[in-house]
Image 1 (cartoon, rainbow, N blue to C red):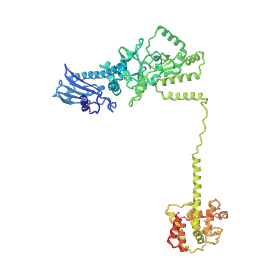
Image 2 (image 1 turned 90 degrees about the horizontal axis):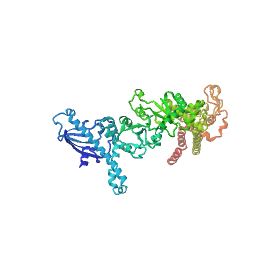
Image 3 (image 1 turned 45 degrees about the vertical axis):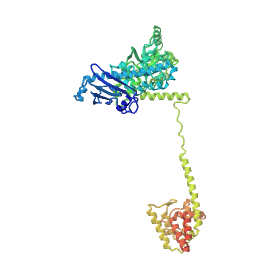
Image 4 (image 1 turned 180 degrees about the horizontal axis):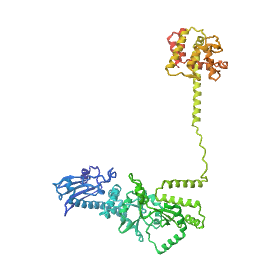
Length: 622
C-alpha cells in the first residue's frame, strides 16, 4: 500500500528507497507520510534554490497547497510526501497561513522526523555490515534478503549527499545530527566510504585530531607530500574530493570533541615530546643559512620558509597558512562564472615553503651555501624545487611561473639526453608532394599524348581519303567549291566567337591559324611579294600550314613580318616528314570543320548507301 500510494503521489514508476509514517500529538496534531526517492531527479542539482513542490499540505483532509517552503528546509527538498493537520485554520488565505506559528512548529518536527528517517537508513546499513562480519557463514544462506537491504544508504548518499552537506552550512540547529550522516573515503577504507563516527572509533590512542585533505581525487591526494608524515605514523586520513566540502568544513570545526585538521596547512598539531622539540630547534639552527637563502631567492612568493613536519621522503612541500584559502578552495573560487578575483585577493593564503632536513638534496644545498659556493645553478635549483612543490600541492601556477617551469623542465630534459639548450634548429624537411604531383602530371600528359597519337592514327587510317581531298581542296584541285570552304571557315570562326574565346594551339590563336590556312600567305600555290606584307615563300595550302604549325610547335619558327604576315618557319623541312604531327596539327586547326568536310567528301564520292554512311558515322564517332 505504501508503494502504491508513493507511485500515485509522486508519479514515479519504481518504489521509494524508504518511508516514514508518523502522527504528532500534543501542542500541534498532524499526520504525515514522507518518502525518499531511490534516484535523484535529473535536474535536482541544476538549481539548489529552486522552489520545490514535493510536499502537499492538507487541513482536515482538504488540499491547501504544495508550495510551502516552511514545512521542510531547502536541503531536504528532495523528500516527497503529504501532511494533514487539524490544528491549522481552514478559513484563511494561503498567505496568512504561511505566517502561522503552528505551521513553523509542524515544519520543525517534520525536519527532525526526516533526519531520523535518514539516520535509521544509515544505521540499518551499518547493522547489515556488522552482521555480515560476524556471521559470514549465514550470509550465503540469506544472500537474496541481504542484497535487497544492503547498500540503501550508500545509494542515498550518492544521490543526495551534497544536499546533506548543504544542510551543515544552513542548519546550525541540526548540525550535529547532519554530521553523523556524512560519508567520506579514507586512507584505510578502501573502496568504501565511512562516517565520522567510524573514523573516531578507529583512531589510535595517541591521536587527538581528525585529519583530512581536500583535492581532486583520492589517488592524487594519497601521493601528496603533505600526508607523508601522517601515513608514516599510520594515522587515518579523510579525503574530501567534493567541491562543497571546502564550505562544509568551515562550519564543522570539530566532531565529538575532536578537531578537524587540514593536512595541507602548516600546523599538523601532532603530539610532540621534549625530545622532538629539541630536535626541531637543532634542525632550525643547522639549516638557517638555507632557509634564509631560499626566502631571499623566492621573495614574495612565500610567506616563510621552515623545517616541515609533513615530509618523510620528499625534499620540499608547499603548504597553506592557517588562515585563508587552501589550494582546492582557490580552484573552486576561480571556477565561479561571476566571481571577481580582485575582491578575493586577501583570502588567498600566503604559501609556506617547507624543507625536509633529512633529504640529501637539502643537505647538499645547505652545505653549498655554508661554504659560500652558491652560484646561479644553486638559485635555479631552489626555484625548480619551489615550482615542483607548488604543482604537487595542487596550486595553479601563475602565467609567469608556468612559463618558467616549462623552460626549466625542457632544460633538464635536454641536458639528460646530451643536447645543448641553445642548439640550432634542424632545417625543415623537404616536402615531396609537389614533385609527386609534377610526376603525376607528366605521366598524365604522356598518357594523354599516347592516346591522342593512337586516335589520330585511327583517324588518319579511316579518313585518308578525306585528308587527301582536304589537301587537294587547298591546292584548288578539289571539286569542293571555294564558296563552301569559305562558309565553313566563317562558321567555325563564328562558333569560336560565340564560345567566348579563341582556343590557342602552341600559343597561337586558332582564329589566326584559320585565316592563315584559308587565306593570306598560305595561299593556293602562288608566290607573293614581301613588300605586300605576305610571306617570302609560298606554301601549298593546308599541307604547308600543317608543316608550318608543326615547326612552330617545336619552337622552330622565325619572326612575324612587319606588315602582319605570318611567321616563316626556319626549318620547315625538318617537320615535313612527321605525318602523325601533321595530322594532329590538322585536327587542332580545323576541329569541327574536319567532320563537316568529311561529310562533303562522302557526298561528292557518291557514297549514298545508308549502311555505309552509318558505319562511317560510327567510326568517326569512335
